[in-house]
Amino acid sequence: MSLVWLPLPLGSNRQWPMALYVALVWVLLALTGLLRLFGSERPPDRTAPVRTGSGWGAHLALSLLVLFTAWCAFQLSPWGYTEAPHDTRLMVLRSLGYVGMFWLVLLLVTSDRRRTALLSGMMIAGVVQAMIAIVLYSSDGRYTLMDESFVQGLRATGTFAGPDALANYLLFTLSAGVAVMLSQMGTPGPHPSRRRRRLHGALEFMLSTKMVVRLMLIIMVIALVLTRSRLGNGAFFVALMLMTLWIVGRSPQLRRPAAILAASLLVIDLIVIGQWIGLSKVIERMHATELALQAEQEAAASAVAAGMAGSAASAAQKPPVAPQYREESLQERIRPLRDAMAMIEERPWTGFGAGAFYSAFTRYKVESTKLFYDHAHSDYVEIVTDTGLIGLSLLGALMLLSAGRTVQLMKDRQGPHVRGVAAGCGMGIVCALLHATLDLNLQINANAAMLTVLLAVVWSVPGRHAPEPSQRPR
Image (cartoon, rainbow, N blue to C red):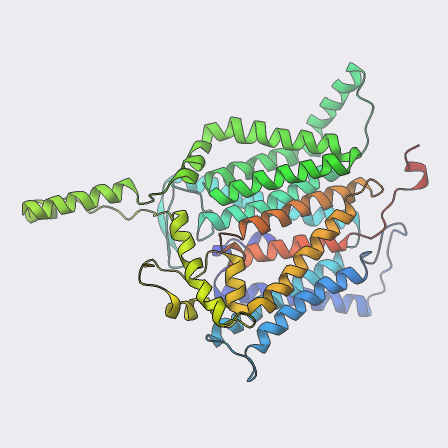
């Protein structure tokens, strides 16, 4: 339920939902510890791996996350430095939530069934958010939620503050859905040489849970396209293609189902459905350089013409133009990155304090940058400006270590479940690394929590998951 709740209050990017999330995680962690300490329950299945088979790797990954939290807390000490102590405390609180979530997954997800249930829960949370986004987008409504004004019908936002944040959330839930799909499709089936067996396999697929998962993936892709997110849709394409090429080259047993899934996502979802719901608008945004809305331009031009003509009275009788959503260009998004370089040059190793970008950026913001920026619009740059190269090294080591773990698990000697989980989580890691280049989505609590769960799932897989001797290929 926490996975479904996280995106509802603006992605939990406010203080009270963030505090509620952290408290819930640590209460669950405490209850898990008490049950393990005083409970008399024994593992029901001897063949199921009870411990996390990744061993020292899981402890190292968790330790990196703990060290990052400790480094953020150190900035609050007399020996550290931060320009915004309150924001740094909030970042420490957020990081404690991620540590608790990571640890909780390692403790509870100890079997293939639990792992599939967790990934399915993430996928269901994504479908719920996608349905909300589609309904709100179709309503063309205007409303205010938690002091944030929303104008629906331009780009789908769901319950997030911005469409790009929703796109990033859907990338992680889509990755979880791909993991569930591939883990089900990786099992060897009957040889498809005969037409009867092919027909039987097609009917079996239509009546199985794979079809339900497939429909859920379609719904999430529709919402992803409706966000019109340039980098979000681009990251999905690139990650899906890289995942497919990687599987084709490394895993003969998973090659065919992965190719079928990727082809269906591209052909059915993004060509057929994309033409229906307006995929061309995403491409137009990628080529756009002027981002002021036409309505605003026309209103400004008419106001100037009215002023020059001296017809102030007639202009006052015209109804005011309703405020509309204004998109950012790539040039406008890169501006704070250029200004933030001066911040990095001044404090490259320690940064200005976790979460202190907004407080410190005002001194380095040049006059030409007239827009309001509370984030750097690049997770990499903001992590360096906040926690320095030390913080970036800790988080980068965690991401690279987890990516290496997915490569290790993508082998045919592993079971189909392990290969599917590795492929889906690897896709999520690639999406996160790509989307973080020119966006701030990891500053959103719900998105960072989803990425934490994906990384923890990678380390919850046992190290040795070879099939039984009777199941080995002859």
